Amino acid sequence: MRSNNKKLSGWASCWLAVNAIPLLLTIGLMRAQTTPATPGLQGSGSPQTPATPSSPVQAPPGFIPAAKPMVMIDPAHGGSESGAVLNPAILEKDVTLAAARRLRGDLNAHGILAELVRDGDITLSTDDRAAKANSEHPVLYICLHATSEAGGMKIYSAMLGEAQENNGPFVDWNTAQSSSLASSRSAQQQLAAAIQKSGISARSLRAPLRPLNNVTTTALGIELAPTTADVSQFMSADYQQNMAAVLANGIAEVLSSLGTNPGASR
Amino acid sequence: MIPRQFLITITLLFGLSIAMSVYVWQLQRREAAMPQPAAKAEHVAPPTSGPMERVTVYVAYDDPGELRPQSISIPLESGRQQRAEGLLAALISIYTAKNSPHPLAAGAEVREVFLVDPGVAVLDLNSALVDGQVSGVLAEELTMASIIQTLSTNVPGLTQVKILVDGKQRETLAGHADLSGFYEVAQVGEVAKELSP
Image 1 (spheres, rainbow over the protein chains, first blue to last red):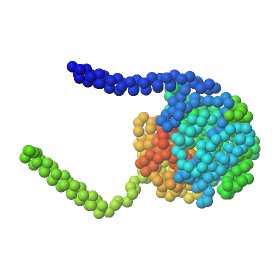
Image 2: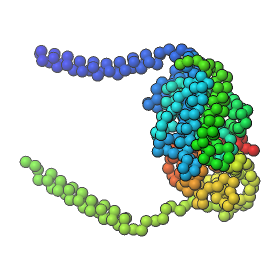
Image 3: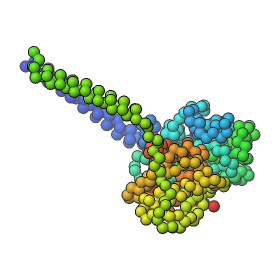
Image 4: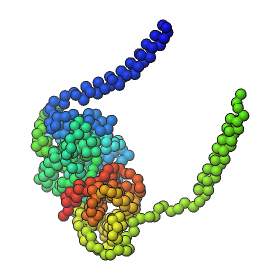
């Protein structure tokens, strides 16, 4: 009799333990989902859920952190992915990294915080890049590319329609940019205008260029181009300095119109 | 004690598996010994039959990075799929010709076009087209916009286009233009407007 009771209580403990785990997990999830949105958010105010398991919880569109406006610069390609071979000695991945480092320096000189998605020759997938940008909550994400075709800079926004349906806290990874598209297109026009003011031709286009679609904040792609057919100018200090200065001025204008204070400290 | 019937069954099955292995091994040897057929040479040939028709194709110009509508006369069959194949063959032949405004490598072609109702087209490009594509955001966008805009203008009812390369999914055309998803025809129309002179 006693051994039967012992067995019964043993089975009951096992049953409770097995059922307690999912119960606790469910309660934890519910509490996480009902946590209030981060202060300083603009837009819908509802928290967004990342579509990939690797990405952290993302900020709603139009996220503008009050104390730390930061620009995320993404030098495209890198590591095993060289991008375009601009000439046998110059790879796109090296041009974008050099330009990104220059741009970061110039933005810092304007009092604007800037970070690089990669600061070395490493391979990153476009999903990794978007996940990093979304987790850092920059006010502006800029993806740098380079082409051998002369003809001025091209400023790209995502090739998407604006968000129409509200999926609550869930965001489709492939169209995560939709809610920030209006802001991105406005920034695109402003940046192109600012670049043109400096005497360099700039063109605004939308493009099927990842990871622009996956970024939840204002996001632009910039394709640098040589001013002549000579691609080697990409590696000259003068060219890089000039391009970085022009872009930094344009970005400062864009940020002021986005309502951020470039001078604010982190 | 193992029953006799069981032992007989196991022995028969074991023998059968040995025989099957020998048969498969022989098949493999025979297959390896056979001359390998050349890579599948099927492609979308320019239409040789059908009435001549005047159509608008959207031709990419690398300099100055534009997409220009151009009216051409080509023989087109009445079937929707044959029409799509004929159109794309005519378009690609512009790019592989001498003095092309947007050069693609010789041998570039659209291998197959599948029109899937409702409104979805799946295009299978060959590797010659993709390998010879100039890498760059604008250069790749011009190729995609030219193909999709030409197709959607002349084959009514298309809403989405999916691009494959040699029958397989691919991330990008040449490092930039995204091929992982479906292209919305309406969005490509907007791009075509931005790229127009």
